[in-house]
Amino acid sequence: MFDSLSSKLSGVFSGLSRRGRLSEGDVAEAMREVRMAMLEADVALPVVRDFVDKVRERAVGQEILESISPGQAVAKIVNDALIEALGGAGAATLNLSAAPPVAILMVGLQGSGKTTTTGKLGLRLSSRERKRVLLASLDVQRPAAQLQLQQLAERVGVTSLPILPGQSPQEITRRAMKTARQEGYDIVVLDTAGRLSIDEALMQEVREIREIAGPAETLLVVDAMTGQDAVNTAQHFNEAVGVTGVVMSRMDGDARGGAALSMKAMTGAPIKFVGMGEKPEALEEFYPERVAGRILGLGDIAGLVEKASETLDQEESERVAKKMLAGKFDLDDYASQIRQIGKLGSVSNILGMLPGAGKLKEKLGDRDLDTAIFKRHQAIISSMTKAERKTPAIIKASRKKRIAAGSGTTVQEINKMLKQFDDMSTMMKRLNKMGLAGMKQMLSG
Ligand code: GDP
Image (tube, rainbow, N blue to C red):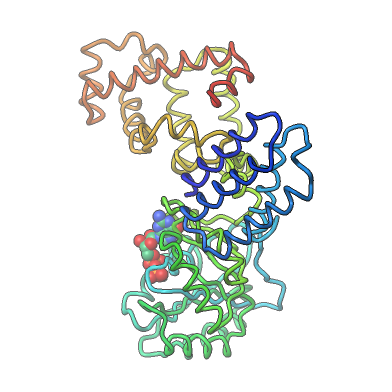
């Protein structure tokens, strides 16, 4: 997500900052490049125009041509404009302040990720916000839909409304709200039926359900991979039923990102959450300032730290970090690192949150970004003896054969892993010597 836009914009600004002073022509040229990059990323044309005009106006108004580092000054203006386009600083949170039970209506086209998101939201609200949550599927069109939500609810440990065959969506809604009132639920998440395309019957159904439930939020789920279609869908839904927020699913894919940048301006509805994977935990709040930072290659350290502190075992991380610094990193520590990284999600996602990662990613390509490799490494390490894990140098041919048989891998794979571990150890020693300055150089070089 945003990879191509990010590397193009970073290119524009590093070009600018290499110059001491900027002429008006330099700025005009940079703006042409920004415009191209945004159009290529599938940002809606009116949004691009507005964006470039705003940046140009501010750049001239602030007399950046006179400033000490004009390249950075332009980057700052672009950063601010990106944040605005994405919906303004701070996450757009859910409005849950009404008297319970508060209803949240989930709408969207079939296949957008609506049911998955309903489950994710149920998990989030119950585990993080400690709410008593009831999930209900109103999808009587697809026979398996209600069952799908029920299974999802079980998986995330949230209650779902018992399925009564033959009820209409309106009847299910009444039953859900009544059950919530009687049994003291805080929140009811209603998963409406999707359609392959927008039709009037669907909109009418949603309007009737809205009448009955009186939802505090109507969240539209759109698939980020569909680009401008996601924005069109949002415009239609917003006109027909009114939308209070958008959840953009499949942001973990390689969508070009234009939809996220166009959504607020084209529909007025802010993006409230993004789906970052198929797992129930893969739902994140949408912070425009962090996303802007990622687009400009400034990284999203705040997001990374937050994610790390939520998912990682702090003590274990510190213990391993100490051993790394002392140059005593062994295969047990490596296995522990792999486990921690696995908890954070895909390696590409993590890399995307680091400053300058665009370049690093380009260098690495898709090589070794695959978590499957880590899983195999884990299997290899767990087939080793304690002594082997402590002192990998003792692993010679016969031991390799035994480990390969034990882990269902090959001797070649073991050689590769040991080589990689060796490289890593060498790299760590070098990093230790270089310190932070050296690391920066490596990232920018
Ligand atoms: P619905 O028809 O709108 O209810 O769509 P589903 O919730 O059944 O999702 C359709 C498919 O998209 C399923 O295979 C989901 O696992 C997948 N999916 C949903 N959200 C995401 C996401 O954020 N990332 C990825 N990679 N897949 C997702």
